[in-house]
Image (tube, rainbow, N blue to C red; front, side, top):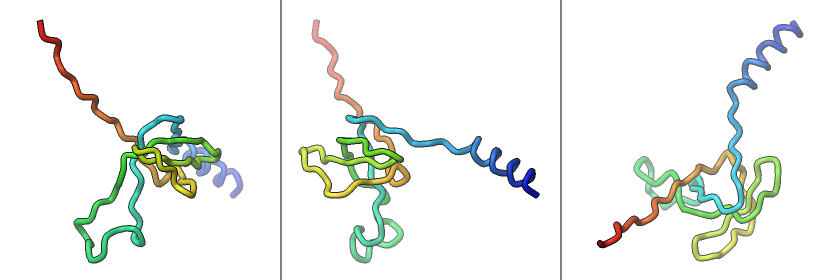
Length: 95
């Protein structure tokens, strides 16, 4: 029984991908039921942001800052964050 449990555990751990962010990364934050709009239901937004990682606390916990520089009072787990790739505006050089 213990050998089977070890086999199942190794199989599960191979498939787990840890989300690792660094200071300065742009992320989106998951919207929970208590923070979403009233009566929004099915078509409400699922992610809000973008936010900037301002501090890595450890064990998958991060401090977030808005784009204006306001820091959130609590930390957020990486499970509730999603990486956001910001597109930079591109203007071709005039010859």
